[in-house]
Figure 1 (cartoon, rainbow, N blue to C red):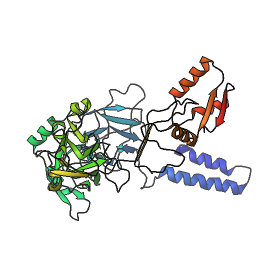
Figure 2: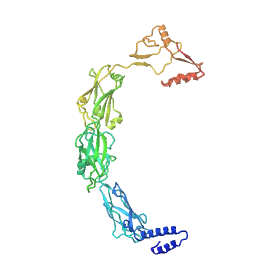
Figure 3: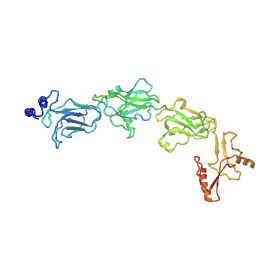
Figure 4: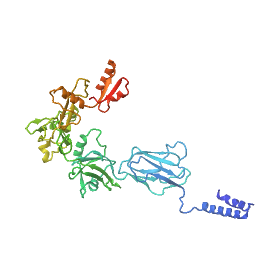
Length: 478
């Protein structure tokens, strides 16, 4: 409704025939509308405003800025030649475009790194498409805050780190090194005070990066950090990238970052072997190995010797081709058999060191001792299976060691055959299942010979006798 039409409308309302009360209410409402339209409140903005601007405040890696106006700023059609509505103060390059008549965008060539501040100021005298002046409710700006950590080498949460580990720290922007020395540090499990950091010099950093393969090289910008003292073995370490670390332009990181690591154990060696239980010595018929907590050179590991109580020396088993190609190993094995109930000594080469150049502790540097025990209990048949002729008084050869002298249900014979009556007594004490193949059919006999040849301990081959009509079963051989 235009202002000149309001009196006529009020007169019409007064002449309505559906009641004077309703007419008075409508007239009052229209009068209030006239007051609002004719005299806008001082608190309401006049003209065109920037309704929405993004991003603002602290933001990481922005790639686009957008502004939405309350009314149309440009006509519909080809908007490529329309001037941008802002004067832009930002060190990054980009391009301006209108998405529609009310929405403007500025696209950066690539995501912005840390340490940048960008300000967008409305062009002086900027007007909307209908000629009204454009205003902004507040300064339109943002920054990418101070530099933060993108990744580290070695990675957080990965494998163990060295006692004097150097950390390659990849950042999302250039950093003021003085602020790193002030705000960064290491917190170590069991230590009350924080360990300060040293920053690698450019030459040392370049040499370190050059030694890495192309998959491990960090992407600039990056720095190298080292703790000012060695880390204790087998302890947790936290790299603290504190709030307040600044870019060269002075923008500070608003929140801290913490990355966790674990220091590897001290370099050590220990012997390992098979035992019947934890209180027995090593089984003398099984191998004895020496295991290291960190890799050692294969040629140095091959120089180890296992010296017996009589002074004889054993060399370790040859390393595999794969191990030789890698150049390092963490295990050396000596093949048995060994003397029973004896003490063996592992002699180490004097210059034995791990891949980080660490030497063994003094108590392990020259030798390790390992004790053997008695041979294990043994009951061993001559073959996986045997075929006994039915009426030939056969004997089944078996090797026994460290077993009871009286074996229930079994008669033990000397190697030299005794009288036939002894064989008969042995045969009469053996229990089992007697399976007969019916007739003289060679096919049946060959089938069973194949079953015997492929028999396993996990499954009885005699179970098939119950389902085979050509077979008969009788319990007890004696």
